Length: 192
Length: 130
Image (tube, rainbow over all chains, first blue to last red; front, side, top):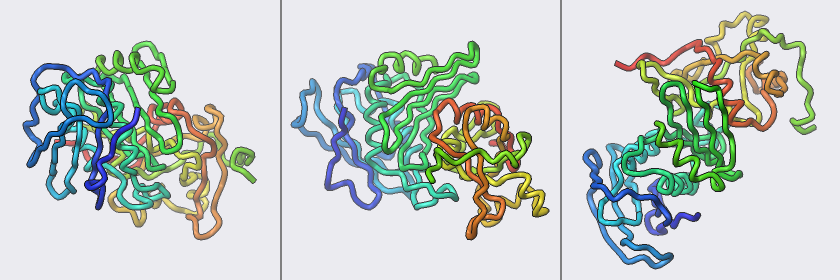
């Protein structure tokens, strides 16, 4: 899966991305009640086949750069989990070299795009938004935590995406590459 | 010499705590209003720590690890737990490093990072959420 970056918007810490197709986007109504969505534009898909239109939305959080998101819209708008996830990205990404007080690299937009593309594939409208955390190598991870159960989708800089799950009840652990196990991770996300 | 071949420094006791700073953007909220570190804190292949026995020799409290980092928090893991997962611990005190600096070596699996998360103990914890 590849995300499509919109060139003109990918400057000055502005995030632009286009989650890919094959999503399991739910058809129920989606709203963005706490998003400052201040502009929209629509266009027909060009890079790949989609049933819906590609919609671009500009989102601004206070004191943060504009975020540009292009996503395949089936007429229901942004899924509800998107704005909290974007807010988490915006607040928590590593901005400067050494942001962790050691030698961490700044979070790279391309890895945020990779993770968002996976999330659009894995999540439905009713999914609980994960916490986003930067990795030392410029990558990012998404974490769900509930009742001592943990699920991570880890997009490291130089490795295939991984997932990790631990059940507090059974002590069961899973750690595998993400892409061959998308259906399993979808099922796990629904537990949170 | 590559890190993979550097030997575990057994002069560091199994019972020693290893101190690591946690920045605000690697905290995760818990249901009870407290915070935990993200597992991402424990994933660096050369994970920097301050070693307890060196800090004791230097008559420094663990909190001294936070000197110069007023917005960070401090957690600890135990050398025994690190070694149980197959990772070597070495001293790395040459200037300009902190004289108590050490490294936990080797590529970290997510299961390692989560095991450290499960056993970590805050030294300087973030304030609870209201």
